[in-house]
Image 1 (cartoon, one colour):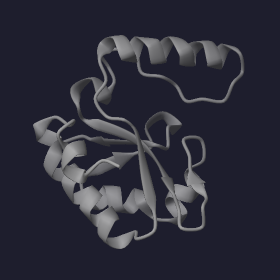
Image 2 (cartoon, one colour):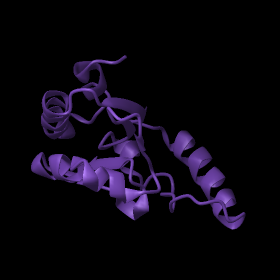
Image 3 (cartoon, one colour):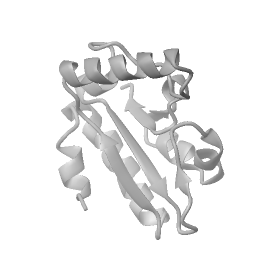
Length: 130
């Protein structure tokens, strides 16, 4: 378990206020939900590895999202987070299905705090545009 503050320290300072509001609203209004952080900041090397894997998966017909080339990902600049959520009903909000995120209004909570959601059909991705 990681605190909101520990997670915020991984972000670019420009994005911290928006993400603080987002996380605090989720913590206040979504009791019983569990947030699983997959990624915040990533190096260009990590982005390259993810990019290479996802390009291979797309070529093999494995469902995934369009990857961002290294240096173009908001993660490279500490402006994004990927996370899954487990609901109180033990269902998971996942990267390939937007319906659960919308049903639980997570997208609206993000928007209320200046956070964008779901770039390139990657529904675990939230980013700060400033």
